[in-house]
Image 1 (cartoon, one colour):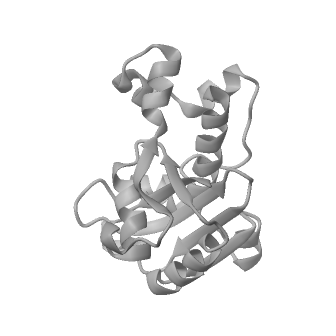
Image 2: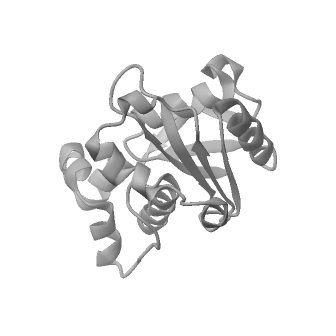
Image 3: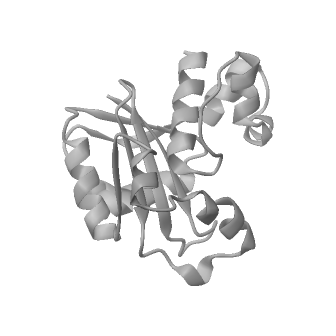
Length: 180
């Protein structure tokens, strides 16, 4: 099963902490989690305005983000997410510029890639390279290109807010489907 995912975290540095994670299967099943134990000392104004402000406002709001949602610490989120992933016999991971995302996902769920559950790929497919090939541009040009702009060209729109992990996971899935 292809799982399209995105994370939001406290910065592009070694000790970053996970704020939220969103996953969407190729069949449309969705999972969204907000973590309560991220390092608040790492939150700067950009993160506050673009990430923290896009988190749920309350429990009812949280439920509108995905089919399965949870707000809690990393241990509880990992348990619930692993349970959600158990519905899939095999898992192929797909993300966008996924260097931090994939490390944070593996760390949250398994501690390290050697502990990954049977059927989980230890590799993450990065759609930034697909975008570059599809549009005949460099990977750097693809990196700088708005994903919403790519979808808009094909009259595809996704509801939600940019820099929210579940919204971004749906965008990644839509771009993948557009290209393939």
